[in-house]
Image (cartoon, rainbow, N blue to C red; front, side):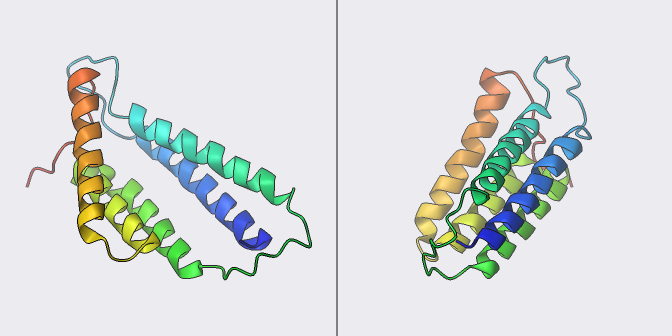
Length: 149
C-alpha cells in the first residue's frame, strides 16, 4: 500500500478504536450484578484496534522510500469497511450484538472478497452467535441481545 494511505488508515482506525472505547462506556451496565459487564468486549475490541492502528502508524515511518509495490490503493474497499465500522459502533446497543456483528462481518467479508456468500454467512453467523453464547453462558456476562420491538 502507499505510505499516505496507510497513515490515513492508521489515524482513521485509531479514532474508531477510541470511539469504541468511549461509546462502550455508555452501554447500560448489567442489572444482575455480574462482574463482567456488556462493555468489556467492545472495550477490548477498541483497545485491540487502537494497538493495531498505532502499529500501522509506526510502520509507516519505517517504509523504504524506493519500495513501491505498484498495487493500487483500494479506497472504495477502505471506505466501505470504515463506514460499516462506524455503523457497527453506533448500532451495537439498539440492534444488539448478534445482529450488528453478523452484518459487520458479512459486509467486511464481501468487501474483501466478493462471492463465497455461503462461507461468509456461516463464518459471520458462527462467530456472532458463538461469541455471544460464550460470553453470556460461560463468562456470565451480558451483551446487548436482540432488539425488543
